[in-house]
Image (cartoon, rainbow, N blue to C red; front, top):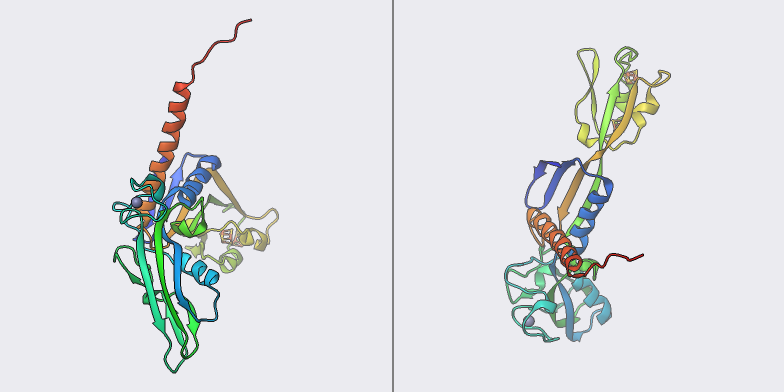
Length: 276
Ligand code: SF4
Ligand code: SF4
Ligand SMILES: [Zn+2]
């Protein structure tokens, strides 16, 4: 297996993995989506709500606001020593909301939530929650807990997690008349004409749409598009809950633990050869 990082910042990662098959690529995608813990609002105590939204919808909207996650300071509720349904300061963090519209309509944003722990705050202050008509009011306490995407999508650490095959583009220079139609039609500007020849400039952006092949007047087309089924391009975008690099590291740890558990269970089983 060979891995190349193409682009990485706090919230976005593009990397290429060579030498794996679709089953392993999909395993990595699913582990990232379902096994990396993040913080999300899990329970809401509504003290007052005269807005147009029912309490349940308000609670649902709060649950879907991505929260910054401090994985090193909080425990998953099931692993916490408190063993309490209410949680403790090691497995729960509170955010409060106390807003009232004056004489004008007021939009309540995620930035109006006041976090008990600044490390467990909304990743953006600009997510609209509800509009309040003049005089309407909301007072509530929201309890955030660590959880996993396999239990609810609100705990998924990524807003994007996809992989695709690495494209392969071949141009038959003997038959290509450099008409440039394939260059003009490509929506991703993958191809370019240089020194009287058609060149592949930006292979990784190719979506395998096939428009370049369809546009070629030669029969059979002088351009061929296929893919390498052992090489995958991964694109990941964090919700902001965790840095994208940490998400991949935690996913690999989770995968490793699963295999270790599998190995342990196998070694615990006493194998008795069948007697004829
Ligand atoms: S397959 Fe589509 S994206 Fe790829 S080079 Fe051809 S036109 Fe461009
Ligand atoms: S459309 Fe066909 S013939 Fe025209 S430049 Fe592209 S590959 Fe060559
Ligand atoms: Zn606890």
